[in-house]
Image (cartoon, rainbow, N blue to C red; front, side):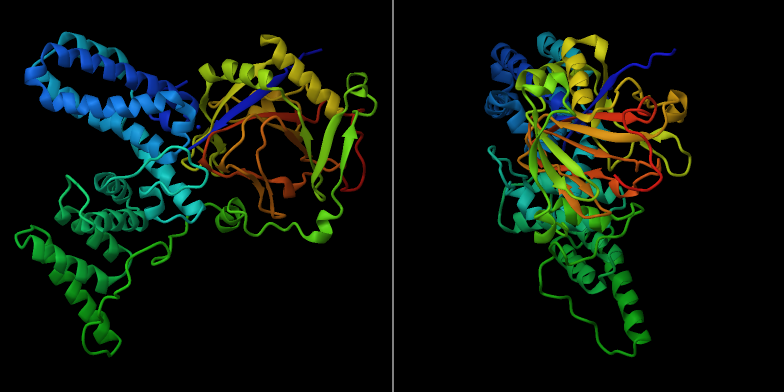
Length: 519
């Protein structure tokens, strides 16, 4: 008889191995970059001591980063819990350290350059910086946060201050613009302009900001405002190579539209500043996006007072399982139909740390199945990382697997091993569909990170050490499509979860099938 490996799937989710182009998806791996950056600062300071008279500019840079890394290394995970800090870490290591290297090469120092060379293989690249920027934009959309909130670091539950400068906002807008995402380009270029008008320090010119902003506003269909912004640009730089032509084109286009509507005179631009809600976000191909995002924000949850009255808490001994008789699990109802329960004290702190220790070196980008090709691939809306751990690898994994069997009464000997390059993983396993899901939460999350069920309007929030459980199939064997679920992006903090997807094979006598679709 073939023995199937018992596996525990671990996923680190953030805004959380392959190095290049995926660093931004994992706070767990970005903490290593915090220490890498600290080491680079130390190397830089040693270089300054050797040639201090020639490197005043470099010394100023080092002092700034020294202060930053001293703060970040005191609490790396807490520091990176702020999505702005994560973005700025990507930006510094991808862009600004490279600029510094060019400066140093003008008068080479073997010690510093060799240190940079050693660490460069672990640096994020342009794709990482872009991914971190797009992660901020996803948080902005999901939780309806304006650019001002991010730029000023006004996020709930934050313990580290982080602000975006004029140049940071400009780079965010430029990232969106280069992706033809004019909606976000407008929001971030407008924020850069707002901070610029408040006389904040900046390197980028106001003409460059107005250039990108005016054209992005035009792409959003707001011709009057595009004309007003382009006129501001012309007033600042009358020799700008595109501004004059764009202005004439915009004015001609608006005049044509007014003539078609039998209106006389140019429609004046609105005096209201551009902000979240000024323009409608373009729809994407993801189904149920609005329902999903509303649930992530805690809106639209369909837990009524009447339904809540049917939820109970109890002690659960796994149908008098010997290992649970003396210390039964504390079980709480999270939802009535489909039935979702939460178990308290499902994992100890020591078990959580051991699982993290085993998983971290193996974390790889999580995949989704392409609806057209059926091939497992990465997606920009799923940036978690996952690892697979076999029960035989460590007693802690074996103990956790046994505990799941004791609690659920189901065997965990038929578990899936999903390889990213294998499109027919379920078929290869030969263990049937997922009959149930057991989800361990291994961290608390300050804001965001809920598991939501769009079909029946539920949101389940992470709580360290607890686990939630539900069946994916009715007793008849038919799929309970109500249990389709999705993870909300983590707004503040990091999210560790361990999943156990339990399959049909081996459950014939543990959960006998029935003829009706009942739990």
